[in-house]
Image (cartoon, rainbow, N blue to C red; front, side, top):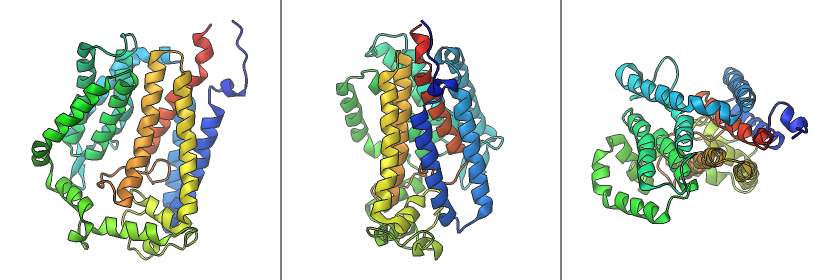
Length: 360
């Protein structure tokens, strides 16, 4: 079969998805400039992070999934070994032992886990049988438990979600899903006692931020004030009072959505949500169009995990979810999260733009 080369496939990039990511990142830089108090050093570092991320997209997208599959178990095993080393000799920052040689190995597992679960189920009959399901759950639980031990509840939940999404897309029975949720509900008292004191505090603060307005509840209270004060049209770029008068903490990272809402209002939030919706829609379209089980499972799980990033960050900043330290994708400042997300979109584009090779 003769391949009809076009601009979409010359570099094996999905032009629509790539353009949407450029628009979102440009949007994020505008917000970060204000949230960082016009800190040009931070802006330059963020631009470098984004350039590295887009380079990673281009590189990963050039590989066919068949070329990647033999390496997936080794990447997963390498990530697990790094997580063990983090607990043994990792660097402790702000009470959490997450860093090793200047990187967070837990970020690797956000990609390695869904890739490993999709790799394992790719040649199995779907929906998965109980034996295969047990192995897949084991693949998810090992790294999630190691990350939870650091402790890093937010990343552990994202890793778990990325793997569970593969199982759901593989046709996991809803009876099993609801049974598992019921088991979690029954185990709530035991799980509560397993939480660290600061994690319990976050949940109690979610239920009643005013119980400690100058301590644990301060972040949420100030964040909700910032979001509400933006009104319909916002106070204008660089004119947010909550952020620029130092009332809002972590404004360039976890709470940057509050800065954005205050300055751009409801209209700006709707524009941002529209960009995210278009990216999610394009990702799900690519998942549906994938020509093998591995591509469908991996692409679907990655795009659903991207949705979890958005939902959790906006939820915790709005006071409807506990604060778990999840950044707003491509808007919050940070290097590791950007690189991980970009690598995920590189995998999504690889699945989509190499389809013609699969049909030859």
